[in-house]
Amino acid sequence: GGASLNVETLALSGDLDFETEAAARDFDLVSGDHAVWAQYEVRNNVIHPIDWESLTMFSFYHHVENGLVFYESLGVPQNALGQLVSHFQVRVSSMLLGGLPLVGKNAAYTPIDDTLLLFPDFTESNRIPLVMNEGVIIHELSHAIKHRIIHGENRLPIPLLEQWEDFALNSYSSDDEGIADFFASLYTQNTNFIDLSIKDDQIDRDIAVERPFTQELYDALLEKSLTYDPYPLGSAIASWLYAIGQNDQDKILNVAQALVQTLINLPAQLDNTYQFHILSAALIERLPAELADEACVLLESRLQGDFRNEAACDIE
Image (cartoon, rainbow, N blue to C red; front, side, top):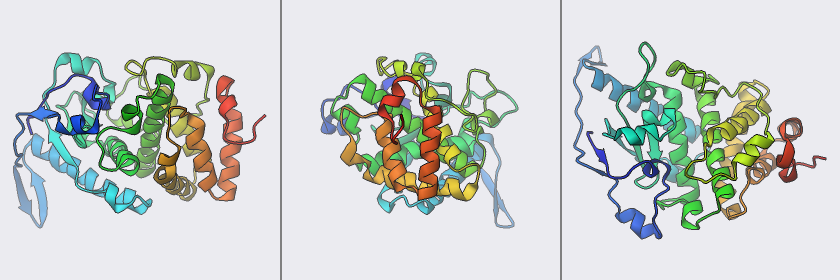
């Protein structure tokens, strides 16, 4: 608890100017942290927090514990489910908060320290704080688990270590956000779980909404990675993944299980030519035949412009 970040915005995306893995490991991400304690009573074998901070910590811990069980049930290997240090009530500057996506204000995963950062509550009144929102925690856990599956114990992701071009790096980042929203929506059975915490017309992440892969989304991939917003394309990816299951929880579960296997086998396909179709093609190969056909039909209906040049199926 009580840590201060030693870097600005780039720490949360893992996009620090490190040239080697060793340099990343030697970097002290936080300082001034200390052990946390909780105020609670036990009545009839049930823990009752007696202050707000304790309620927050217990709620967060509950979501993480159940989330790890959820990911294990999808086939995530044990080496990606190990202990995850979390820093509570991280102190940050106003510039850092202003430079982050809104969801990052309360919880974020950073691979530099393989750590979850939990910021003070900035949520609107009478809504669920993001650090208590189980969908948000499952989303952030997805980032951690995906990183561990693909990069193992390395702190620097392959795109940063190999200094990918912006297009490939942005594609990878959007995949990351889309996968995380998909897993979180499956776990909560709520396709718009962020709405429980933030009521804002600018936050458009409901994955039940049909979202085409537009030329505008493709063109945005050419932006500088430091200013690129991965959420719009990520939402299109999550919407496609969800739609493959045709609103059937068992089929959506099949998609999620195939997605985990896709991530396990993805490292061999990671290079500076990375694009969305690498993920989608690998997933379709691992889907049951009926769902694979559905996935291709959906792609044909949603891919637009230059996205069609990288289609995962035989789309004309």
